[in-house]
Image (tube, rainbow, N blue to C red; front, side, top):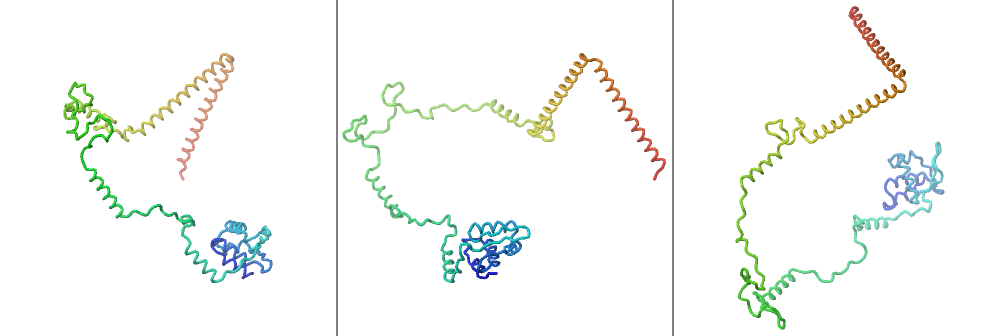
Length: 317
């Protein structure tokens, strides 16, 4: 038993091993020798210390071996415990109170989710300062002043020095388009929709046809006063129709197979009759004898059953 090794195992941080691994390591350290650090804790005691099952204890020991905290010296067998060496690469020191306090401060300052924490690289400064409400108001005022300076109204003609078809000065109004049949170059404007005739109203026949189509869509089961499109009782629903089609297909296939078998047997019988008529006659006679023997056995069984019933009536219990 080594109290010192067990205390060293107890002070290992949670970043190195979890609770179950620490309990198994403490049990191995508790059973170890102070000088050689060899231990034979036993499977039952490690299960009792960690509060886990046999398979999980084996898994935890394998994980400790992978972490380098335990070394397997002898593999366990039936009637012989496995032997381990605790801290094969050296015993770590017991931390002081100041070191434990530093660990706690570092844990408090660490982010809750390290994957979402910011990296250590400094953030890039923005190219310009953030825009405030005053900047927005100033920009709106500048735009309003520019629109006032330009003035409202129609354009004042072509730019200076440019040749174009638009005459200088203010136009008297918008173009009115060409007269009907005029060969002018100015494109005519499309006529307004008010000049078009009103669309014809739907006639009564169209309305009746629409109502008829709607009535045809609602019909489905003619066994009711008001036909419906889905009737489970009458079998007009799609599922019942599919099932009926499946049964009819199966019946057709069965009838086709029976017809094929009858034709096959008839063909075999014809071949035998052509090749060996005596064998065919013997086969028919054997079939008649088997049928007669079956009928006789049926009559005998019926007679025996009548006798047993009569004897039971004569001698009631």
